[in-house]
Length: 475
Image 1 (cartoon, helix red, strand yellow):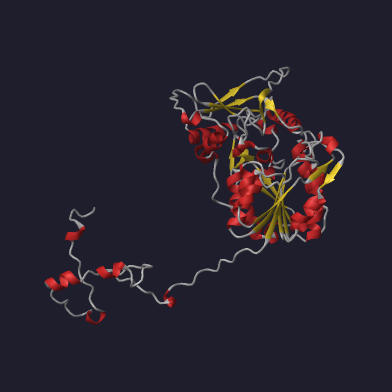
Image 2 (image 1 turned 120 degrees about the vertical axis):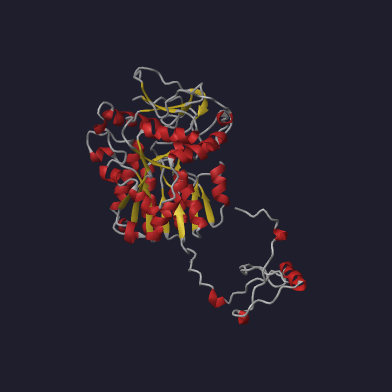
């Protein structure tokens, strides 16, 4: 308990000279009481003897250099990393961490539009290469040189850009998207990595479920990555230097905007409802891509191919939560009731890019398999072995992850505000609601999609929604 006496009233005992350690202290006189003002224990400080503090008897301790323990060597990384689709969530997370610890990055961006692209281009030690990874003829794009999502046609990977991307690089983190012919882009990136002599190639992959069980459908966007992985494994010089990163469901997918599959639909009473085709009780792998991909991939690089090479597959997910458990965690974070509503049909309320619709249809077919029997729902990563490795393997790489509850509390409102939403500023008193509850709803298979003309996925309602640029949710 602090003393009730004021500090000026406390007597300060002079420190005895070392030679007089066994002699009685000299009598205190009025003179010594006014001229001696030394502390009992001399503090460590960076102030010098010329400091004004010395005039009041505050004498800094000047430690000899030999008394201070030597600092541990912290060598600055001297290697350069090639990264594609650098405004995507995985790549942007990685670049932020890589440059923070001293790596140099050569980052490919389609353009410099958007908040993330501007951020990445302004980071130190980042060389930005602007351009598409796939060239398509202007006639195929209605006069535009930019490729159409999810379609194949006349065109070719941008080999000049890819070659320039790898110039001077020793490492690579590659997360392809279906902006153009993804398989051809992935093969071209791998081929040029061989030529460039990349020492550690980290490829963000996903499974082709039909290869694990012929009864399971193939998800188009994921099967393209699986095809690229198969190609990389066929390259004798690159395969031993490659790590395959499989990422869980992004916490950052959630939005109250009417985007398919991960809409947290705001109700009139201020609560949220998440509607999806996942079985309510089957755990799914979750990952905060923007927060945790970067540190995890950096650790893969630090450990090197002796630990993670030779085609090692890494399941990066820090929580295994069923939809009902995810809603409970989200509810705790956001401070509002959140319910899960099972619906085997994915509602599409806005315009979505070509290619993404096919992915959603395939997801419906896959998850209907476990609608009545949870044991029949295919593992998210295709392999039950990889599913069982979560979250242990991810925690081996990075222990400071951000869970879904923390995301909902600290980040979700900020992303919503970036999208122009204001619900977080409104007060709602809700009583008697069950947090993390579940509702069943039979979908009308013959119903028509209600596509809003006012909102485009990756765009906005007349203005941009910077938290939802195409690169953000595609990668």
